Image (cartoon, rainbow, N blue to C red; front, side):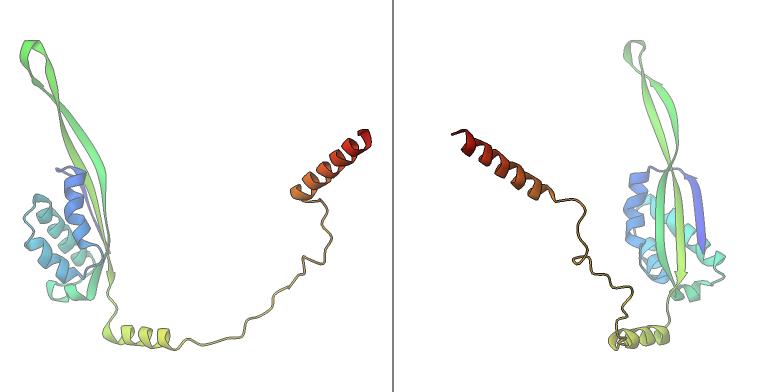
Length: 165
């Protein structure tokens, strides 16, 4: 159950402030939160959440049976305009827009949560199976390790210096 709002007329960073409040909440809690949040983005997000609930086929009374899984706020179009300034110059005005995607999932009922909690408390123990146990220590190594190489070089150098002196 998903709803998408494209080219919403507000900057991404301002919308994300409100969107971060919704993640993981039940849909009815999120609606209540958005109604009492004094931000411009809260009105658009509330309408988007209601649209997602309608897409899920739920009425407002059934909003508690869904939860907000994700709210993604992406960058949209940027309208660029220019305003005249002193001495014939112009300053840019950027009107940023946002794309908002809200995803809902069914909230697990009390019975399902109780079953899930019971299965988590008493896990079934199964004996570990041995799949192709290999003994790597028994196999001879093809290459000597780097430390062995260094040790062998040092030993050769010591032998040469002892022979010379």
